[in-house]
Amino acid sequence: MSCEEIQVRAGVGKKAPDFTANAFVDGGFKRVKLSDYHGKWVVLCFYPGDFTFV
Image 1 (cartoon, rainbow, N blue to C red):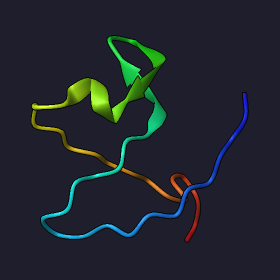
Image 2: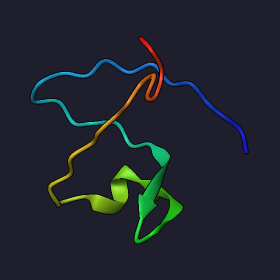
Image 3: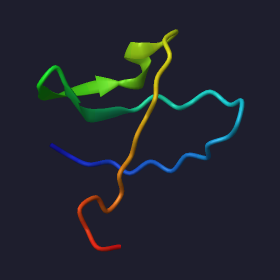
């Protein structure tokens, strides 16, 4: 598995760029793409430094 870093500028009213990520779904991890949820409401949560003393 390779990691790819993409720099994107987010903006209010702008379309979010498509990306693929690991997600915990139905009791297990799987790869999901943002485009798989086109036309649906999506809430993205990120936890940088989770479980660290930042």
